[in-house]
Image 1 (tube, helix red, strand yellow):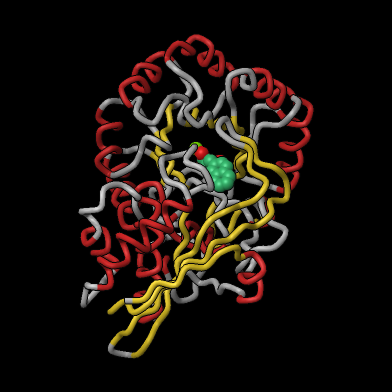
Image 2: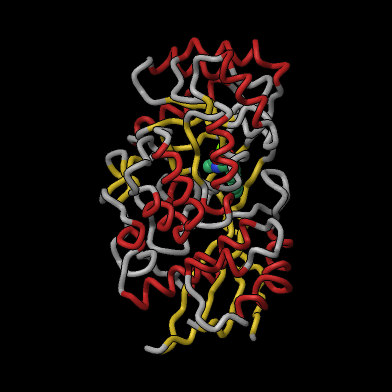
Length: 372
Ligand SMILES: CC(=O)N[C@@H](Cc1ccc2ccccc2c1)C(=O)O
Ligand SMILES: [Mg+2]
């Protein structure tokens, strides 16, 4: 396929409720979409991608303004010059640009969808997904009080989510976890995510979490702290899970070899795209390491693509692919519905969802047109 034009759509979608992590409080979902137009032997085709970069470089070094600029100034010109562009070679063509994995992922995602539409394939078929529904977990932000934490989690359990993930940070960890276990018992799947808020100095404190039968503890230490996570893993019974640290298949191989992670949170945007994410899935499976699909509060577009990725056999733990209603009153695509603890894997060509032009217009705050 020949890339002929790109439109970057910057969005801001109100969240149903503020989302607080150890690094930030968000009241809107800000992101940008990549609308990519291609010429193919069988005529023009359009593919869509979504960048998971946040408005500020606080989860990783990427952020929306930087992602749109690097796409316009450095990544798009490379892809415009490729005559027969395929999804499987986007990463290779962009290899000389250092980093900017979320921006590369959004572009690759648009090439993937165009290629799938041209072939009349669903993303689940393309990846080799093996299930038609995936267990749907929910990520719960840090609340103002322990009582609020118990109330909010009770509501999600009532809704039927398959797994609860609670954000923690120093000063808001043991007490809320203990209160939730006291309120709802030991039978529901429960895990925590620190978003790198601790250091090895906190090891003895974090070990107290071992008393609560958690599925895993996600990224307690810093992104670069692979060795430190293996030290902490030796001290804790709760399985160690990495998110921010797993920036590539190579990083996943190192973390597994060092005993720094026994479960991996897979996020295509964090690793440079769905093709690399599948490599991590395959690598982890070969090592008997479970993976689950992480979330970055994606719109229905990213959520649909994530659901297809999560239908691969190695995704044996519920992920953060919640229903659209967890975050948005209105989505820009058809609503992704969580029902009976699961989300359906889209079956249509491409990612299987359509972006509603009226809703896109309503939530668009900026547009960048890029031509050859
Ligand atoms: C769902 C979840 O916990 N995701 C990330 C962190 C996160 C949290 C909040 C966000 C708000 C706006 C955009 C991206 C965000 C990502 C995580 O697993 O670490
Ligand atoms: Mg995380």
